[in-house]
Amino acid sequence: MKVLIINICKEKLHYFEFVKPIEKILKNSNHKTNNIKFFTKHYTKLNSLDIDKADKIIIAGTSLKDNDFVKDENLTKFKWIKTNEKPILGICGGMQIISLFNGGEIAKTQEIGFFIEEFNKEFLSIGGKYEVYHLHNNYVTLPKDFISYTKSKTPQAIKHKSKPIYGTLFHPEVRNKELINRFLEIN
Image (cartoon, rainbow, N blue to C red):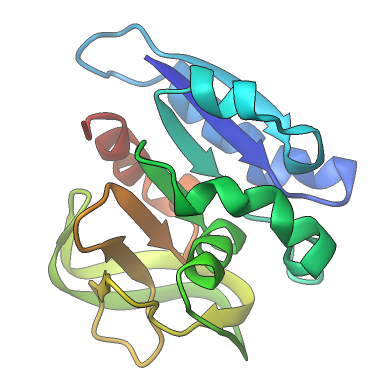
């Protein structure tokens, strides 16, 4: 299996906080095939061949003040999301991108730290009351054809109704690594 990790960080040093932990999880994964290969690309350097050769795609998050990825000229680099059929996991900014391409809107709220989220049904191995790590200035409204898996007023975990497209506003690479491992098992 080949996983594409998309780096949306404007600052090069932020790679170490938001992308490198995901790479480490994939390196140490106990996936049943134990044959995970991954490659990381910055979204500004992404091309259709990268999307084609990936079996699964993870769009990593970024820092609180980094919102360059949602500027119109940058957001167009993600238009492939509309026609993609491969499993995608969007983390924080990645979930914002997925939501925007599916009719959701960005709104302001700052949440930093560990929060207990209540999941109304299991989401990639997480269910019930679960501690997650929030680090965001924005949230997104629930896009059309998506289901929210949390009871909070702002969607924290979403999935498309029929496609394998997932999003978390929280950061599973910090606190809930099993969620990323479970995503690797999705067909």
